[in-house]
Length: 229
Image 1 (cartoon, rainbow, N blue to C red):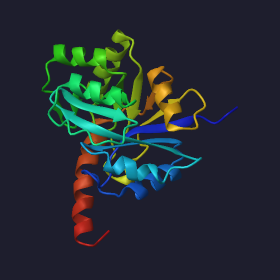
Image 2: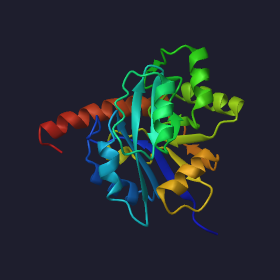
Image 3: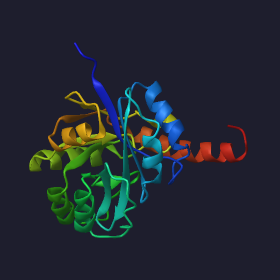
């Protein structure tokens, strides 16, 4: 029996607000046995493009970006061009990404970290209908918000993904998905997401995990500045 193809489709590097450089993030993913990794820094593809250089036969690294749209955060997977879409409507993000062959994933649509989404539910559902997939499990989001995302995806028959949303390399792979087809390239993975051949595995983060991810990142940042780490 072939080994499962595990992936993490939402991570950050120091090219936005992560603490570790792209190469370090990819190496941690390798150590954790991931075969698919999407680097999605906030509003820039710099980290994803750089990280893709460190991929190989053992791990497919997908360049991408997390766009801060007015309708929530939207992941564009498989793009290498700077979006310049911060604050744009979701429709504009979708059009931009799709015209460049990317896959659009609505990230943590109902909440993020310790707060609920400020986007009206009716608008969230409108956006969910036009994206390619919905992030069902996000590692920095309370379980109740993830559960709502799962229910929305199922009600619309939308493919689902999962990602750690790691901002520190050692958190990569704390939430995983599995690809249910053999893949050997970025395009293969993008096709799998569109076709619903990616299943979110989790685990569903506990409230303590979410708080720890926030506090832990801040403590580690201070320790690095002090030269302790």
